[in-house]
Amino acid sequence: MRPTTSTSASLPAVALPSVGTALRVVESLLLSGGQRTARRNAWTAVQEDRRRARDRVEAQHVLEAVSGRTSEAASDRTSRAT
View 1: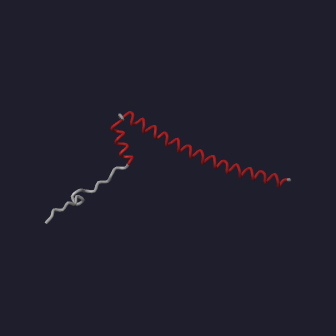
View 2: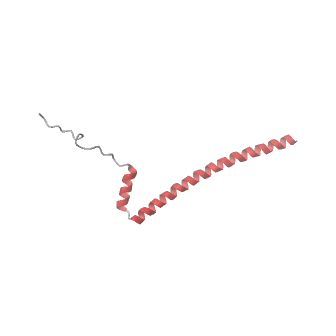
View 3: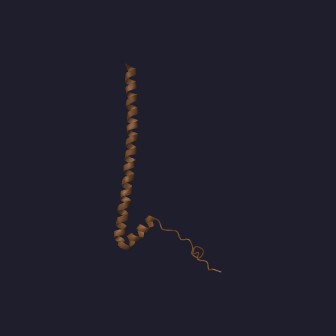
């Protein structure tokens, strides 16, 4: 009788960490606490700037759409008055 060589039966399944988790571990090893906090704050600021930029573009599109409609309505009124 041969001994079984299957290791999957004896070892529990372990989930591999995500790339983000791995980067945070490396970051914690390389940077001190203050630098790590500053880096995260900077990244949060970048994300907020991007969100505000998307909001500005959306607001600009809405304003352009509304101003286009109001200028059409105004020109309709002036053409009907003549």
